[in-house]
Image (cartoon, rainbow, N blue to C red; front, side):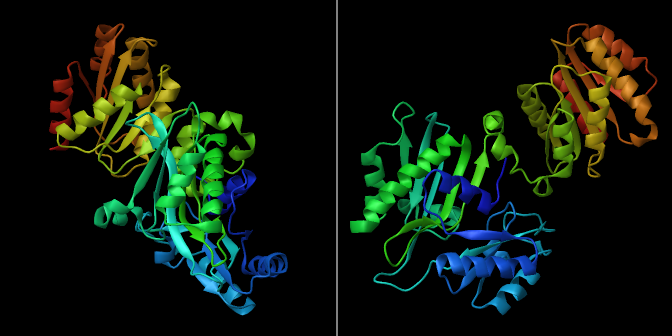
Length: 397
């Protein structure tokens, strides 16, 4: 589950991480009131208006702007709220901005120059451990830094038995070139950031930039947070942070129906049970010259109702030219699945206007094939993987 910047900062702050303070507004009038309140609380004279969408690169799309007075706050908020923000991480249509975050200006003058760093906490899948990735080149796309100056990206792998140790926090602060008060502040920041990552059951915490202010404070100016869906049962308060307006409507509908669905850009709809078989099926489609239009796992109870719901989800995608059903009958018998396919097909009637290929293997697979072949419907059955690939290739050509 992805969070907005302001929500991620709320979690960071609850674990003692110093953040750039801000107030959310959904209208320009609310933005003006938020500005007045923020000035009263922080003393800041200038304010940064930030679009709140689940996408990075907001500044490049005009979603982050500086306001020097209340008039500018109102004008900028009016401009950003309601706009379709296009960034390098959105589709060409962009994402509609429903709210903005009014934040304090933290780039004030002082004894030293402000400096920006990149920092993230995530899972190192190769090592099976969490790691902190960081760089002195903050404020830039980390992909660009990795491509042009890979020597400026550092990683610190954390032993899950001990958590982050003091020497690791000091090593990070040293590699970022800090000293004195800023060094101590960074050690505290890194330690609390890792605690926030673990304590919130997140799969990603990305702060870009982490800022060293002119008076040597260290704070999170931005936050990109992804919570592990499997751990949400432990965090009822985080569940309330979910913003379905930012999610794919079809994926939201699938989740409510108890189906695992991810929308892709291909032309062959997939209906499979089991993640491993789903991935193999997607590879099969690509080898046959097609592109998977989705990942859809109907689970172990592929009855008529679930199959019909799966059909409806797949057919919402206008790019779909064929549907491949690949089910292994273990927990559920193949003939029951075949009955479900036939029943769902009849219920949907002329809504199904693309070829359907069905491969059912496992318990009662022979009965299932017989049911499909004798149904009189525009459904082709297959047994072998190669046979499926050939049929996919045939219908696409």
